[in-house]
Length: 143
Image (cartoon, rainbow, N blue to C red; front, side):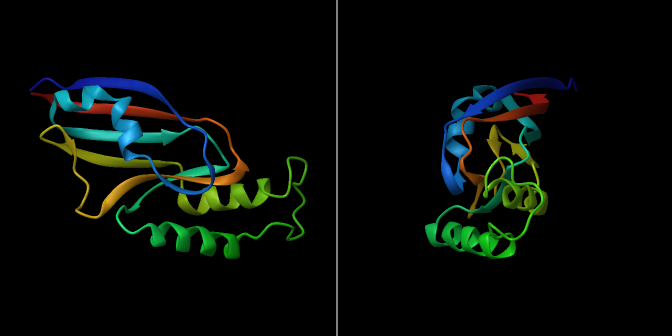
């Protein structure tokens, strides 16, 4: 079996603060995934004020509840020392550490092997985070 590697930078659209489903946007920019019979897809977000997660993709209330709870865990104006980039910056760093900046998903028969309810999320922790960069690395056996 020959293992095949692909690595690509994906530029995500600007989004406001919140938890955003990005599975389809990522797949549009990563057509090579459809060439893999079996493998792994690793996604790494190159930012410290946003994060990546796998979670519920069907009920939008889940995203709202996650955002609300994160804001309770790391509120703005809580006496942070790091305030030079605005009141939403330090809470964004805390939320990013809590959730993380990378996920790995199996590839099975040219598809990301999410569970029935799962999707890939960008958790944008800044009011205006701008375009976010994601490094996608695929490795595995081609069809």
